[in-house]
Image (cartoon, rainbow, N blue to C red; front, side, top):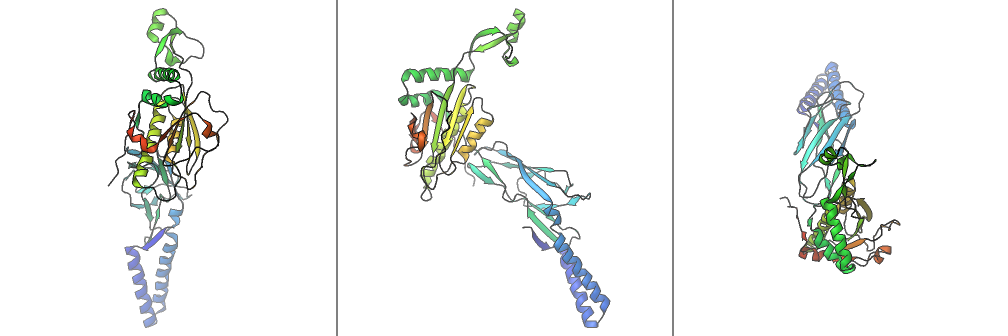
Length: 375
C-alpha cells in the first residue's frame, strides 16, 4: 500500500487555506470562503491522485544471474509503466543503497533497467533491499511512495567445495568391487581430461569443432579427433537434511551447510564430463528429484537450486517419488544430517555409501569453501 505525506508546499497551501477560511467566516466574506474551499479541494484532489502514477508501475527481477553464497553477483531489476499517457512521469527515488542505473525520469512504455551488486553470505531466498519510488502528482502538494521491490526475492545457490574425483571414487569402494571402482575412476578421468586415442576421416554428423585442421590440411581430407568412449557414468546423490523438531543448534547447522557445500562440489565436479549422468534426490521441507547430464549448463543450475532450498522437514520421511527410468549401474552416495532414518520407498533399496554430515569435515578428498559472513 503506497504511503502518503504532505509536501512542504502542501503544508503552506493548507495553512493558507485555513487562514482564508477563518478570515472569511470571521468577516463574513463569501469569496474568501469560496477560495479556501477551492484550496482545500485541490489538496484533497492531490491526496487522491498522488498514487495514480505509482499504481501504473510494474517492477520485477528479470535476471538474478548465478548468485552463489560468498561470491559477488548482480541482480537485474526492471521498472516500466503501461500508462497510455504521452507525458513523461517524474519520480524521486529513495532508499536506493546499492542500486545503479536509477532514472530521474521514467518514460511510459520504455522499461528502465536497474542493477544491484550483492554478495550474499548464505544460500536460499534473499529479499531485495527497499527501493522506493515517490511522486507528488499532479500539483506537488502531497507526496506518495511505493516500495517497488515488494516481496521480490532471488535464489542464492550454495557455495561449492572442491572435490577430488579419485578420493570420491575410493570412498565409494565399499559398495562396489575394487576392480569396478578402478575402472570407473579411469573412465571418469578420461572424460574430464578430454583425451583421445586417434584421428579418423570426417563423417556426416560429426561436429566441426572436432576437426583437426593441421592433419586435415596435410592429408587433403577432413580428419576428426576420436575420443575414447568413456561409457555412461552415473552417480546418484541422496541429500537428507533430517527432520526438525526445534531450531537446530549452531554446530548442527554448520554441519548441514558443510554437507550442502559438499553436495554442490560433487555436482560441479561430476558434470565436467560430457558423458556423466547425475541424479540428485533431496529430502526435507521441499523434496525434489533433479537430473542432469554432462557439461554443466542449465541442468547443473537446476541441481544447485534444489540444494539451495534444502531444509529440514517438520516430519520425517519427506522424500520424492522414485522415477521409473533411472540409469542402470549407478554409484550412489547418501548424505544425511543427524539421526535421519532410512530413505523412504524404493530409495532405501539402492546399494549406496552413507556419509553423515558431522563426518564431512574430516574428509581428505574434500576442501570446504566457507562463505564469509557479513558484519
